[in-house]
Length: 475
Ligand code: IFM
Image 1 (cartoon, protein in one colour):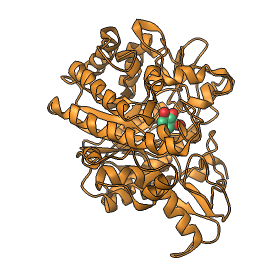
Image 2 (spheres, rainbow, N blue to C red):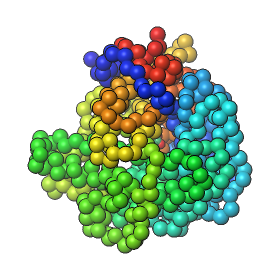
Image 3 (tube, protein in one colour):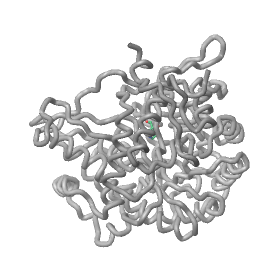
């Protein structure tokens, strides 16, 4: 059985509710390039990617997809696909090159032009304020381990809202705080590359505080609809010790607390889960958590953004040291996943998306959901006819959409689905080798080519659903 066959879930036609939002997502450092243009300051990712050995093949975001100069054509591609919504991120170091103080108007001008181009094309702009490009000047003062960074972020949010708030109604504060904190300050595989359990918990808390403070700033501008974007995954015990009281179940519960509930509970329930408090207390203390923070972090949101890629597998393994990305997970192993896998080596498990959505609607009712990222990297190549056939991606998206649809049918309040990503881009520590796009980017020429999946997604959007046989409306 091929990977494509293995992940094609069913051949039934499914239709989404009227008004369902269809879109695609990107992030500033991954596509913009123009790293020194118009007064942009350096970010932690500029520093990190220039540090030998940190990013595959020494790639940097200096040029990326050159979207900064080509955004009008890229918006044209979005219009061609029929996107209803486009999620992009604003680069903090373009807006405040040193992370504080007066705004750099030329940096804001870029987002002004982008938002106008989107609106002219009938596409809803969905602005993320933070997708990991912390101004280096703030990292030099302690970065996310410092409480002050959260307050600088709130100031930055106010500056962006003042310029774009008359036209942008849909906002996300922070993208994937788990990744920013635990890969940036715990395992160090992401910028700024620090490796301290204590720093990782501090960073996570200050990112949550930044979220809550910036929700307040965005609200001060009026009618904004505000979200937070979390990477969420089912955590599955698979060492043979599962069962209600089995050791794998306890391991799964601990990792679920570290990965999912560490963010969901403070935002949607007003406080950290006990296993997170215990781990953070043991690994450096909780001095960074102050009275009043819980209320700020629990500031109501209008929408929760869900980024889903794959489940996390765990097994009880007494004596195993903690994985640096999961400080506090001593005694837990992370067994490798079975095929089918994406080019990232990530397991393809569409039902995991459904599980996440149903769990959210059960355990955290009342907050509408939007899938802000879902997609996959595969080994895409241009054929001799110039086309980029990517049947695995079509099958992947088809199966995940079917899982999302089933979750809707089970009562999940799901409002939309955005593919990661609009186009191939800088995949962080993996550089440009991993292609997630609906649109193929030839980095030598910056030529864009619609992959077959882009045409398929265009038909899904225009049909507001998926046709039978896992093909969308695409023939
Ligand atoms: O490329 C990233 C994105 O920046 C955040 N979510 C996961 C994607 C794939 O790794």
